[in-house]
Image: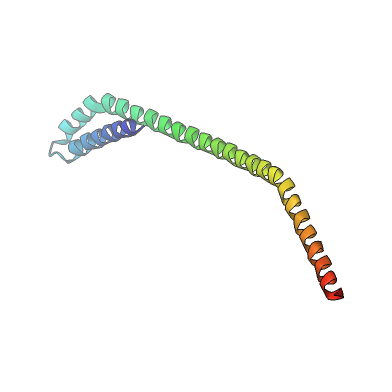
Length: 118
C-alpha cells in the first residue's frame, strides 16, 4: 500500500510538473497550442490513471474500514462471551463464600451468647 501511494504521488507530481512547465515556459501562443495538442493524449492517459488509482485507494480504504469494523465487532462479542463465562464460573464460588461468611457470623453470635450467659 505504501509503495502504491508513492507511485500515485510520483505520477500526479509528474503530470502537474509537466503542465506547469508548459504553461510557464516562454513560448509563442502558436507553439504552446501545438505542444498542448501534442501532449494532450499523454495528459489524458496520466489523468485517467490517477483517477483509476484514486478509485482503487478509495476502495481499499473502504474495505479496510469495513474489515476493521467487523474485527472490532468480533472482538467485542468475544470479550462479552469471556466475561459472561468468567462470571458464570465465579458465581458458585461467590455463593460459597457468602454461605461461609453467614456461617461465621452465626458462629460469632452463638459464641457471644454463650459468653454472655456465663
